[in-house]
Image (tube, rainbow, N blue to C red; front, side, top):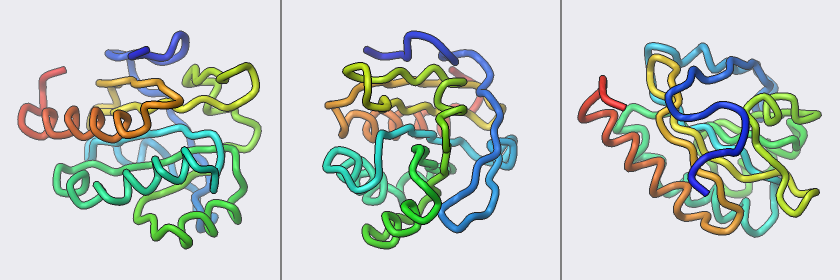
Amino acid sequence: MTAATKGVQEGQQASEFTLPSESGEPVSLADYRGRRVVVLYFYPKDNTPGCTTEACAFRDGHEVFAEAGAQVIGISSDSVGSHEAFAGRHRLPFLLLTDEGGKVRRRYGVRRSLGFLPGRVTYVIDRQGTIRHVFSSMTRIDQHVNDALGVVQRLQAHPGTP
């Protein structure tokens, strides 16, 4: 599936939010408007095999994302303390935000998998706040990173094109 079934879609404005980071500091999507492309990825849970693989793949590509003008942000319902430990254990150089209760996840339309697992969806949001890419898959974890990087690099080369 290339897009979330409901919620924000490619070409729409990203839904604004403010959530606490792993350090407890509030982070707003609006902080990046006009400044950076945002790779926003929702994942099920800290310290699970698939989520650790995905976070480490974003970590390993972090320098390339940064050079292309992108900020990677991960969101799950885990606590600030859980995010802090997860980020420290795996040396994650990007933000992890706590969405307790899943309010932002629902606003973005990230569906549950198998009826109970929070979904895994990646959004690429351009500097104007427009969604340029949506990818949803619980199993094709590397494709989340590779597809997002391709879109970020395209936006860097041609900033005004979808």
